[in-house]
Image 1 (cartoon, protein in one colour):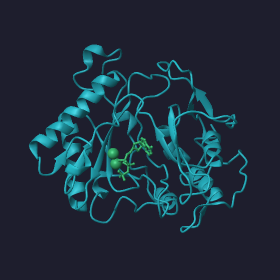
Image 2 (cartoon, rainbow, N blue to C red):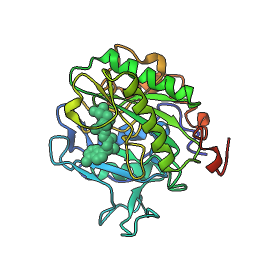
Image 3 (cartoon, helix red, strand yellow):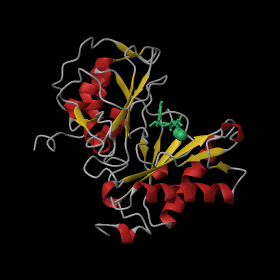
Length: 306
Ligand code: ATP
Ligand code: MN
Ligand code: MN
């Protein structure tokens, strides 16, 4: 197929036209609308599994990162036909959600000034059974980087103890995300309960280091283990999505052994990520989907156990 003929690092051809390709989305970094489209074309093979076939929330910034920002969950009028309208089967209002199925859809999102892509943790083929868990590690004021790294390793260990493989990415902001692939089986309440139990166990075992609830006043010097990405309709930024923040950072998948003092959450950017991927022999998250298992303890509810 044409897709598999694309060499690593080679950009796929874009077919969706861009208006105002020179519009600056990250003025200080000099990244334009066309530069963003080129970025997604170059990393398409890597980002596609995380952004296609899912409902998406979008952070749209028509005048770039310094202008007004809209966090948008629903479709709007005049949407490019390359963008799919999907219906949440549980939403009686009937307001369609946004989804894409290919690079054209991605470029149409860029044309619509989408600077961040935030997918659901389930696919539109199986809305009620998530295929992704995400533990969002949010450092409070005064938490140093090594502590954040240690926390990600601790989540990894706890996931492993529960029988789950996990992967780490920078958020492109301040923290790290530990992400575990699931075979869709357990429903949203079960997945939320699992992640809540893990976050609460961490806070109970080390109350000086972790909190599991949002109340910011209590966060100074602690890390919020934010499990609330794992509920129906919640989103988290996609692997390889850009962030509408200074320096054009991207949420960067890492190999576990890359996690350390050098790579901070904004280390990888629109400008250096394509080079990184071209230089690597494989994506650091290769095997992500193949390591998916049914949520442990959810076997009885599973339609396809194992
Ligand atoms: P950081 O590392 O800086 O925490 P992050 O992406 O993890 O970066 P959070 O604030 O921890 O940021 O996570 C917020 C998540 O909640 C986002 O990833 C997004 O999917 C979702 N979200 C919900 N509502 C909004 C909103 N109005 N604006 C931005 N994100 C929102
Ligand atoms: Mn976060
Ligand atoms: Mn958070």
